[in-house]
Structure formats: structure tokens, C-alpha cells
Image 1 (cartoon, rainbow, N blue to C red):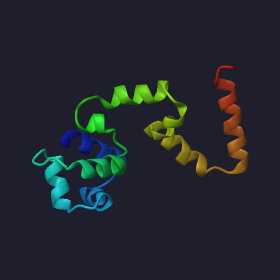
Image 2 (cartoon, rainbow, N blue to C red):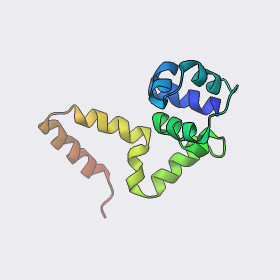
Image 3 (cartoon, rainbow, N blue to C red):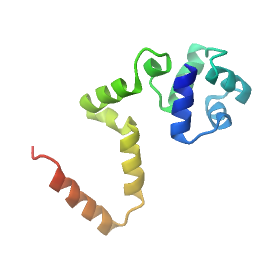
Image 4 (cartoon, one colour):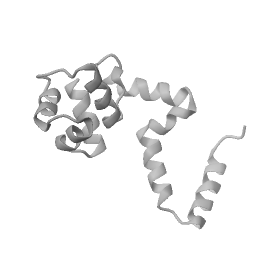
Length: 115
């Protein structure tokens, strides 16, 4: 659990204190979890996964982030917004002007296969 949580926290650019606050636990407790000295309760695991946008399967070591990411990408498109790549694109798009958005739409139309 600890390695997966630490990796997700670092990818999100959060401190241990940030995660602890979002989960509703003491920073020291979160630190022990991240170091593998303590396992979270099921409710805490649920909040931790939400805060870190981490699959419980990955957090518990039952799957890799790559396998979960591939399943999300290939599966229901409603889950694609959970992928880090999609969130990064959306953050960039939100900062664009209307003309820049129109240009990006043209680029997307040019590179996507026709349906």
C-alpha cells in the first residue's frame, strides 16, 4: 500500500500533510501508512483512494497502475477522465481562448480516425 500511495501522491504533487488533510487523518498516521508500518481501515482506504485518485487494486498491490490505466482506456470512455493524461489535457484546454479551442478541435479532428 505504501509504495503505491507514495507514487500517487508524488504524481499529484501533494505533500503527506495534504493527503492526510484530504483523507481526514493525522499526517503522522498517513506517513506510517506510506512507509508500510500501518494499514488503513477500509473506510480510510476508500477516502485515501479518492484523495489520490488511486485504484484500490493498485493501492493493495493486486494490479499495476499500467494495467488499470489500460483497462480504463480500452473500456468505458466515461472512465477516461480519471486518467492522468486526460486530466492534463483538460487543464490545458481550460486555459485556452475560444480561438485556441477552435484550433485544438481542428487538430483533434485531423488526427482522429473517422467513425
